[in-house]
Length: 113
Length: 113
Image (tube, rainbow over all chains, first blue to last red; front, side):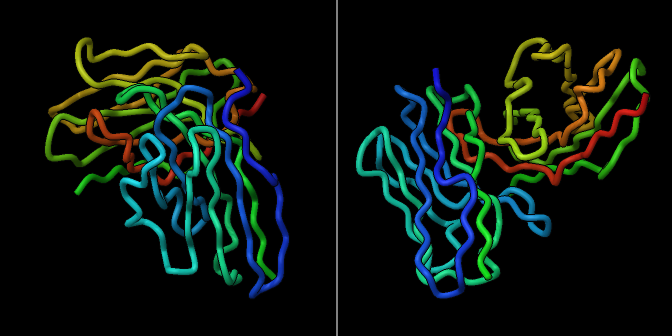
């Protein structure tokens, strides 16, 4: 299996620009998670989906953040407009069955100038 | 609320020596516990998990962890570390059946020759 795929791996943008991060979960996995990792706050869960439906988005920091999962094989996390404090590594993870743990992608390192 | 404490930010161990990384959790019910490893520039990889049964669980790469309910601990151990074990290690806790995990702040492991 190819594992969780994320793109781009690195993104550098200017404040105010729209940023879209993409994730392809492992085939057959029915849950998908977006995490953000920073030195100051560690790993934070932003949102997770089950069977393409958003279950909990309480971790989404602001209305500038939005996430979609139009089908079982694709999800996006969008930031509009981006700000320097959004600079972080964003991870996507998927899981097959409850209790089996999460499988993480390699992450997208976002830098907002 | 669930929480995880990893009291050691950074640990240095000689190659071939034994290792123990500490993890303490706070959770109102039976916890579902994980250890993940993150190599530089990579995503998180699941080392092992525990929900019930034998309190000593074996994982990949020769790691094991012991659940001690009385101490609210889930420490990770390895009898003999290899230079390739240098990485950051994260403990996580969550409810079974829901992958909404809370991660600790991580312990960075350095291996010296």
